[in-house]
Length: 431
Image: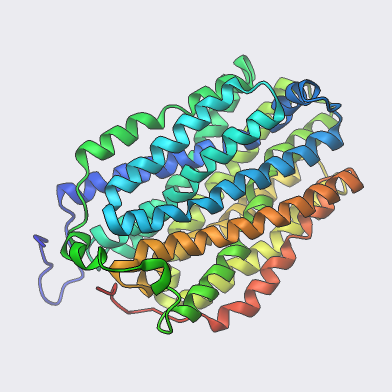
């Protein structure tokens, strides 16, 4: 590869070439708009279901909005889980092409949600969008790991992960403006924007040289079978378990935040537009905290190791979730204390960056995308089941507070699993 190598004895980083820069921005933009599309639903959950539930024969009570919303989140997660199909596609046909395809799928079906006439139609469109959204992380993470030089790929993972949470900020800004003035359908229409990124990625971004060097070998491989071979079985199971913990926590860390801030704001006497704006501010604070967590993680992982760093972030989630939902929300401390805690909840939510740099280090090129996609998808299926349980608890208790606070237990379990993972600190990306 034509990299400009640093001089011996210096700490200068390898200079990125034009294609590496272009590829990064394509992956980052896709990941940003993926985050935006993911959060749009959370931001418009209450108004969308308030309109659609009566059309579906269900009273639009707060309990029904909360429980139906949890069910639709679970349906979305099942779509996310089905996204494991992108892994073998990327290993066989290329990272850039698959990256473009995932963006195209999630943008089309997010836009289609604007035309939903019932809660169940909305659920169908979110399922299909989830198939695309779920594949984006694995495609983008694999691309950056393989395209960037060894001495820069770790920070590349951190920079890439910030995109998802810039997407949160973008969704919050849209909700503050478009959503507050034009309603939830206009928000879903904004989700069509990534189509442009998809086309540009397909036309302009080349496949990583690391993948093209192994292309003939990849096409003779059965990647789903190989990630469960004796060489990889333990790490695949452990990685899947850790991703499951992180994904369960995501719903407390992000998805229910807008509904919680909206509820607290209405209890404080705000009208609907003011409550929507307050929810946008809450998501912005969460996003800023998460971006800080994403950028901080790679240096921590390089100094203390992947396992210790993930344990630190999991501990942060285990503390912040009960503080936010068990104290500030359930006990009615008000929107301001809840939003302050969101910064720390967001910082700890940057734990996903650890997987972006750690998973590629554990697998060879011929199965890397499949392993990444599989590990991230398993957790989504289990998370869907957890969401059905949460829906039942929200319906029975009439509140989001206690059920969401209890998801902190998942991170305690995660801390017990981390010792079984393999440490890759200081190791090069496998060929």
